[in-house]
Image 1 (cartoon, rainbow, N blue to C red):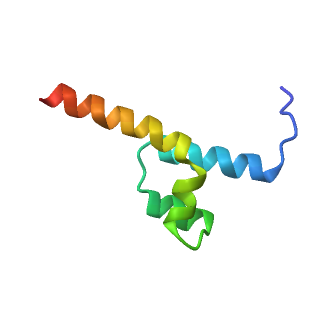
Image 2 (image 1 turned 135 degrees about the horizontal axis):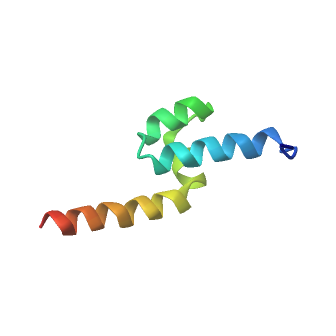
Length: 64
């Protein structure tokens, strides 16, 4: 099987996106990426955060 070449940054982004979707603490993801502030991570991965917000609302709704 041939794996297409991908810039390192793409792998880094994919790694962070997967961690965020897994529900990993954003501070942990931020530290893994070497960001100076967790806010940087949250700004970059806000598309993932929107999905997490919906999932949280759904879980809350199911509970109550």
